[in-house]
Image (cartoon, rainbow, N blue to C red):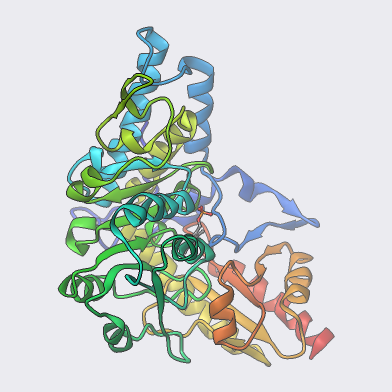
Amino acid sequence: MEGTAAVNLAPGDNSTAALDVERVRRDFPILQETVYDRPLVYFDNAASVQKPRQVIEAMSEAYETYYANVHRGVHHMSQRSTEVFEAGREKVARFLNAPSPDQIVLTRGTTESINLVAASYGRAFLEEGDEVILSVMEHHSNIVPWQLLRDELGIVIKVAPIDDQANFLLDDFAELLSPRTKLVAITHISNALGTVVPIEAVVRLAHEAGAVVLVDGAQAVAHMEIDVQALDVDFYAFSSHKLYGPTGIGGLYGKAELLERMPPYQGGGEMIDVVTFEKTTYKEPPHRFEAGTPAIVEGIGLGAAIDYVSALGRETIAAHESGLTEYAGERLSSVEGLKLHSRAKERASIMAFEMAGAHPHDIGTIVDRAGVAIRAGHHCAQPVMERFGVSATARASFGLYNTREEIDVLVDALGRVKEIFG
Ligand SMILES: *Cc1c(COP(=O)(O)O)cnc(C)c1O
């Protein structure tokens, strides 16, 4: 299924095309909804993004016209389901510029992808005293799996810092590397702050120290072009639901030589070659890591989401979002008593802030009355909240369908927060 190319293409030039945001918005049925009689302003995109009808329709079409279990049927519907589901895997491979679809393991999402690496690669190749480096900005899903491994194996976790402007400190990271560093697990874009980590430099330094690198790409896939070969990452994890696709599916890219050496971490159907009670042999990657019936229709939806985003062009989306981020930065800093935490030089369209006298939950509740959905809380990243000495922040995060007018609605609503609490 082809996504709709809602861009203004100047002849012979698609790199600087502006996003036709009004046309894009018509692709998202939920954006027609109202909240308390106000048009919905959806700024909770870092938690999950809304879905275009192209994705919704691809999934309905699957259920209505060719749904069956995949990979084992000789009958027509099973073959058709398998074909479209596996086409989704190929689209992921092309989207990340992976050399082969066999290097894409389909999982439930970023969390499961990271747990897979910890449980399979971690248990097989790490031992007591080995070091794993994380950053202070990690989402809980890139902290807890390593703590579970620490409890099991006695590995050591080290934490790379950021400065007060939320910039990643590459030199400090480099100093943490040692001959005992076996793995670096780091986010590409912080969901709590929007900071973009210089992955290429991190990978170069980590490889020089002999460590492999797992990148948490949950935020990055929707906002920037990802080329896993150019980045030279060893593993790259992402979720479909932050990429305009459905929940329940995502992926893990891995270098072939690593995936081939990794043992299975869950057993069941789909992942085996031959089973006897004496001995079972396993399939090659990626199927070795995909026990049980996969999220079939979700995989088909993910393929449709990738078509959609690719047709718009990630550079075009990034340019639109960086315009929004710049505008929001100016408008928000004009709000009296507002303190912006997202101030890194390299950052994506995520704005975390506080307001004097108002708890983030109060901010969230008041702007909700104006139809604006933002998030208030620790954003699944409690250590970085502690880094800034807060227990929670308010966070507005933008996606490809957001507009400057919507930012104005937020800023007006924040004016009311100021009136009440200021
Ligand atoms: C959302 C997110 C995750 C977790 O993704 P799930 O889809 O919940 O598995 C991990 N890391 C970052 C940076 C995220 O934004």
